[in-house]
Length: 278
Image: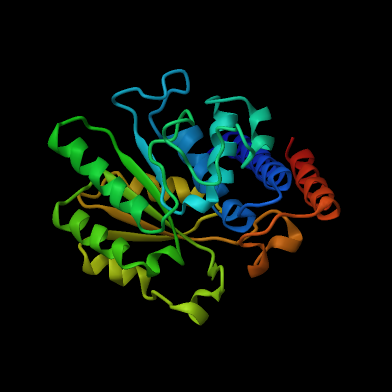
């Protein structure tokens, strides 16, 4: 990736993080930690990789994206807004009465959302169905999904993975946002799914392990995935709360909103990062 493109993506990711913090603070609720950890993944997919058109969100041959870890909706909303699916100003209406931006993605009311998600494990199942449909009807679109590392403790995830591997759904790529923290503690403390890569491989997936906050590695992984004739799981090691010092690797920011003082600190930090990139 050339330096100009990388800097552009880093600037966009920083703006997305500002949108995440703005939304969660305005709502006084939400999930900032896991939204901040997957920001680079969503930014790369929507701004560099996927075949989409903000002016035609229901374009028939568009690539599909499913946020299986639906509680990270603030990240998806910020990316969609900055990509032009709706006004950025709407981000501060998160979770408010009358807003299209519910606490979890809503495909009926939010332009650019391909699947309503929230109940963990169901998103990847829907993504598998979309990939199967694309293959069956010869529609040639690709499907991408992001799962949480805590989410993959759900049995439904592995039923979906088994089906996708057995059907050879090479048009399906799943990112596991491996930030090593879930609502009740570390993955190891709660119910570790390790070795994650070997489990996917046992269900006939290819796996790639990357730093999920590094755009070069995300790009390389997606380019490699496109050459593999089976579903691909990209195990993306990330930092929960990435970009906000007091949220990084802190489990208490899984599902909490910053107060006014901490909001100002987060916005100042992110704006300083943005200034350094411009």
